[in-house]
Length: 315
Image (cartoon, rainbow, N blue to C red; front, side):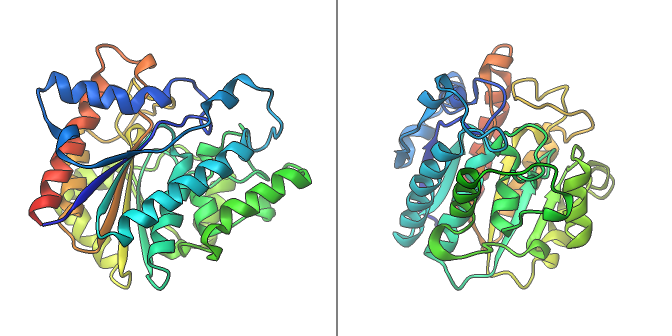
């Protein structure tokens, strides 16, 4: 039976739409509404955040608030690393997806010799860099951080020295870069990405599983195929962005996209992944209750979270 620890990261300085920092509390309220004792059942750690930066002028247009994000990376990576070293399974509930790069760094800091696989369940590839970003929002960059790529082939911006310095800091946390090899990343339900990101996916032959494949083959077959693909990996991190769900249900997130997963499909996929002993960390992210009606997105996220953790405890 796994010892589980919750790591709460109510940071939204990497997002473009305001409100994701309220996602953690929204999920807790969903748990109360379902009369669940989930959040008192497990030890938890709340990471201090720098959301006050949202009120300050943006210094780095191609990586907004990257200085604050570097601080968040230091905090989150340490929390994840310490959790693993103390033989707990970290379940990270984060505001925006930018800190996933710190979660990955924390896993590698705790397990420097591990060959880490990443299952990225997300409508977006998050493979932008300060050199290619169309928005400057760092929640579009954590996968590029983790595979340690600048993607200079597709550069459209001249990045200032300060931004480049902090970007290099993100890539090199734990003095390990890259944290993950591109061939050890699997994208599931990926459907909204730019040509610069496609360049990296094609250049490194990164694996993409579409929503259609999930629907046609079924969760069980997809999980089996993905785990076989990541067979050489010693550890696996599963990251679930709620915008992987179809926009008809994922209204309470900053960047909803049509043609996504149904709630049951996401739940089945994640709970089946959780049965695998190589999975060492799970993250759920990008719930934004300010964009939602009746806290529906948080309720869906909580159902997925609760089922996944129940499976974890039994595996």
